[in-house]
Image (cartoon, rainbow, N blue to C red; front, top):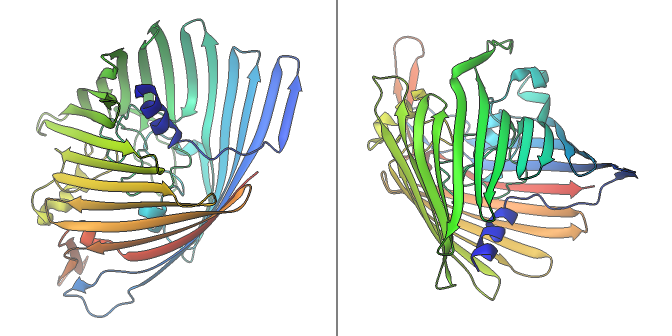
Length: 424
């Protein structure tokens, strides 16, 4: 059952399989090409900003992404994986995050030399980027991977404090493809159920408005090691090393209690490189169970040592480089309840209730995915936030207006999105 739990968690992060539209097999050489197209339209209603004169609160964001995927291999020892995507959006990139997540990636751990924003005008943008480009080698008891690749040490599902590289937000329903980072990775098999992983990830200096690459930065780079083994039907792991802007030590565990209740735990302590900054801890604890009626329930708690206890100080989180290692959360304590179920052979449903216990705001969301054809899905997502909204203070000088959140989740818009996804 422990293996079943671990496999179910891994499958939740995998993209839907599609038949390759190009397949080549000549001797030891294999090559496959696949594709994915997503078109998303989000409409919503922005929260009211107290103290600000009337403004347009309607939200309408349109985006699309075309992804081409290459998998090539030579014998059973060498493989190449490449993902290239082209995005088009009719609104700023930030409007496509949250419950409609997955439209591109932030710049952390990714050199801008592999992305080209060839259009950015009038509220519309288009970008061509390499999301993955990794060469892999499989040796006896050793696996090597060099290049742009997805990297994670996460164990929990919603909150993943041990995922320092392009982590999904807790609100993301559709985790189709985890963005890659520029990394070198070595996995060594220590025993039948034990493994050692060492990963180095390049970080980069801030780029100027012309997207000129200024080169790698040691402060923003990472070198992490993780060792894992299985004991008492649980997988245990310890990790440590240098993360972006901090030294970290932590670990995780996952397994099943009484062959019924799934348990996932992960966390770390971070010591910032800046001696003036404070040491902080992050911890996520999750419980889950999959019922025979195909209902999967998850409950997770998250302690965020980088968060603030006062909403008036939330803005400081975005100035904290250590807090920005993963997905930034603003409060100290969170809890989320998630549910997923196969409603019919063609229709699946997902829902979550996310609560910021610090400011007592919450967000509820529901997603339905319907299979239109063998390789075509239609997904609809609706989300409603509850909590104090935004506050504005007018100034006599530039920037003229300062906006602060009354709560974190109460500052989100009410939103409904529809997305068509096709695989080929």
